[in-house]
Length: 201
Ligand code: ATP
Ligand code: MG
Image (cartoon, rainbow, N blue to C red; front, side, top):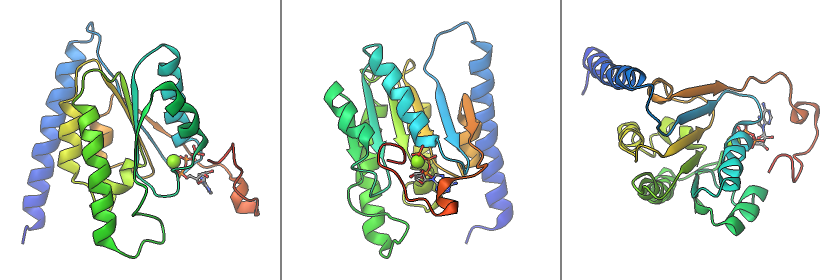
């Protein structure tokens, strides 16, 4: 059993490592490099922002990949459009939903999608990789945080990565170059309006 003190020390060591690496990157600010962007918070607009970034890159002729970590987003309009433009999708077609019942099958599904994403994060032909809703996989323990941090840290230098999802882990936001938190002011769902195709998915 790992006690709280050990956990805190490990956390501190990891944070120091992350900080040292970020400081080193800031010192090299004249250099061009890929950006790690985290879009989190409870308001609407995280995934659409992530996909907007992919659309922007595709428009410049860049090669892009998308990992989608929540079952049910597979039929989203962005996929239908972007696959036609050569964007590679790794989709968690089975497994995790909000009504999840089976942790083992969810973990397997998440791991399978994560394995595909790791390949994109190790491939320098990709300019931008979106990891949509990855934050939940970390929170639920389906994908190891350290593995995610390592894959993002060790990615090709010019590759940009976007992670979306509520409650992004502190280590992810610490590592990120840019973090945006989308705040919920109000949402149509709260006044009983059904989710709209073309707006909500
Ligand atoms: P979007 O995909 O529209 O950019 P999102 O990625 O910020 O939304 P998620 O938490 O991934 O938000 O939720 C996806 C779905 O839930 C979307 O259909 C979205 O409209 C809806 N949603 C987002 N935020 C809220 C909210 N605060 N209250 C109710 N529904 C929400
Ligand atoms: Mg989303």
